Length: 79
Image (cartoon, rainbow, N blue to C red):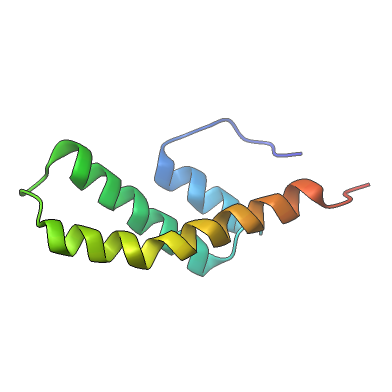
């Protein structure tokens, strides 16, 4: 059971790393994905489609890894 309420995205990812639900590399990658999302949604500094697409291609396998790590934690026997 987690003993924390939801915070901002970056704090939530730090918490998951601290609780060893995801590994530090996954946490860094998900922060990058969140930053990309923010740039795309809010169009910070304009958006270069080629750079954004390359970042999405790089981050998709890492998003799957994040899901896998969370599923392992959800399915773990913590009795």
